[in-house]
Amino acid sequence: MTPFRDYAGPQDLRAMQALTQHAWSLRSPFHIGNLAWERFEHVGRDPEWPTRLWLDGGAVLAWGWIQAGGHLYFHIDPGRPDLFDVVLAWFETTATGEILTTVVLDNDPDGLARLAGRGYRALGDDHPFALKMSRSLEDLPPIVLPDGFRALSMAQVQNPERRALAHRNAWSRIAGREADPPGRSRVTGESYRQVMAAFPYRPDLDWVIEAPDGRLAANACLWLDTVHGTGLFEPVGTDADFRRMGLAQAVCLSGLHALKAAGARLALVGPRGDEGYPAPRALYGGLGFTAYARDIVHARKRLD
View 1 (cartoon, rainbow, N blue to C red):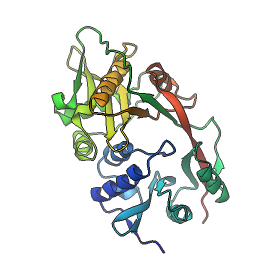
View 2 (cartoon, helix red, strand yellow):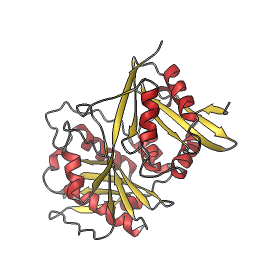
View 3 (spheres, rainbow, N blue to C red):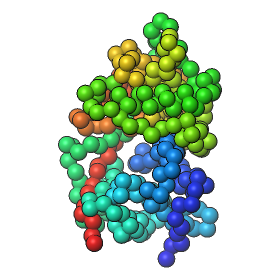
View 4 (cartoon, rainbow, N blue to C red):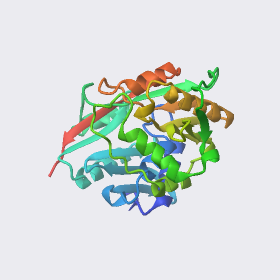
């Protein structure tokens, strides 16, 4: 039996990232950056998220992370496919939701077959799903801003409270979705400090657009994996007060130029791919990103 332990703090997130970085490929659902963002964007949520690591000495061979009672994030060393059933069995006996869901990419036929063998069924395109998109960092267009607006990195802003407010403003009233109920972002200065303390956060890769009145109108955080030369956008947002001004494109281009300067070769992003929210997909397509894979969301009923 493979030894395991339950998540005990930020040092275990770093161990999970080590596996994800070691095993990363274009078939990987995760990047070291989105693990850091999702774990630390809020304060005090660890008790809501059962998380387990399977080990070989100090190395993590697999990990599972349950969110919202019934959704599984997981990553398994490709050299240990036997752990797939171990991780899924833990999920199915630990999750509390009536419907259990998880995701594999459509370019991972082995993962698709293994989920089907455990009774999961693929949900259709009417269910929200994400695309995996990439862009070379060659031939980047220039950054164009309206008069009086400035592109700044967190190396210049140096204010987590202000940066967290920019995120809340963008995600409370999302441009293009003004008719939706206001969001309730839980990102605070305290939680953003957690993000900034996480590997591999870099303030020179965290960008905002400052309006003439001093508000931070758009923001984009990028995460660089120096081993693979990849940089991930997570998250990106624009305040609805500043819609249709080209600020989302400008903040993303600011990040792309900074990512190239930092030595990356490839930029990644994972926007919604379904028709329920097409605006981000259109933004990144306009920036030269193309899709190389997509999520296939799978579901089954919980077994009592």
